[in-house]
Length: 433
Image (cartoon, rainbow, N blue to C red; front, side, top):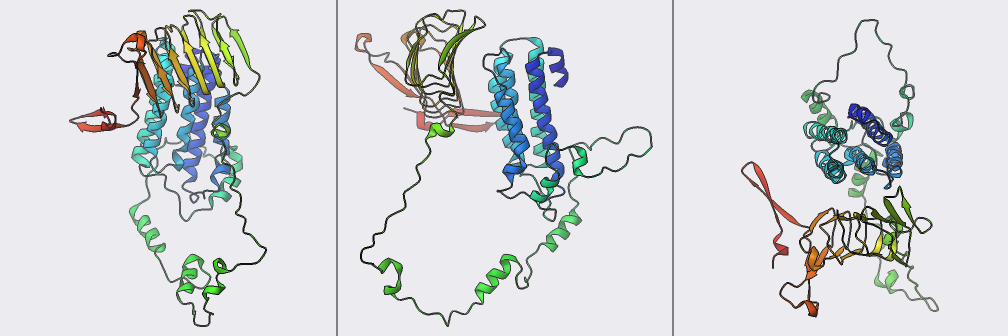
């Protein structure tokens, strides 16, 4: 994959590759640590994983939708989530989910049919598949930590992820022999011998705990506690039956639930603007509660609608494609679209085709409604990781002048069955009728 990036010789691709390789180094450090320390407590994960979280934020910020290599950056940034397999009860399934997200962006690169870019994508996916296979062979049911090891918080405080080798203590001196050390064994490190497992099991078996020895001692004390000298609580002594004059119980005010937009990262993030970049991309950004008409857009240009809320955007001319990204409650009215209309990471958005649209792509969206004209009813609709999607079309049995419409739910649930050596997937029966 690194060699493919060097052959391509593009700064965006080289940086995206380096970020992914760096995440693999951090993952290796984490896997090595599992042999020396206990599993981190829930309260410790945030601090321990801060290096990979910072790396992920850096990768996401580097994704510029105006760049010709935006999809390369995005595919790499999404792949960094593979590191979180260390917290997953099923690492192979977690990596498979990451591969599906990767495919969404990788397929757009493959559609360009550029040989060197295609080679990079295939090498990248091969890396993820190898990681999945390794997980299936070595940690199918989750990562195993050393129950008798050092506390995770102390271990990573002394040896944080990504620290220089010197931070982990002095390394043993290298021998003067010729050649390099042997490579890691195929399939990863050898599992714990059975005799060691048996000894650990015997050592950790429940025993009679001495006084003050953890929760076992607490439960033993509770079991032998004498309640004979306690006073009985009568009904009039119960708090619920006590009434004080001049007092009134005021229920605590419930904390206001944070609005969805507060943490969904959707909506305006700066000054509203509409500008043409590189004579190709029309950028419509950060509008809130307004109406925007893109009268100057042409069939050789793309319209990118980014970080808008409560806005109606009209594209009256024929354009190459339309992309709606990180928007909330945005309505898009368009005429003819040559390529596709894409909705990514949006909430409660609607797209209405007044002319001919050949394809609609929906990814990571909630509450999307697609309105298709008579010319667009044969459009191909692709959806992934989205919910509450509907498509509205003219009623083929109704009269055109009456404007009769039919609303159809886009399936979210599927049923898969193994048939011979293949998997047969069908739409769930809840969508029938």
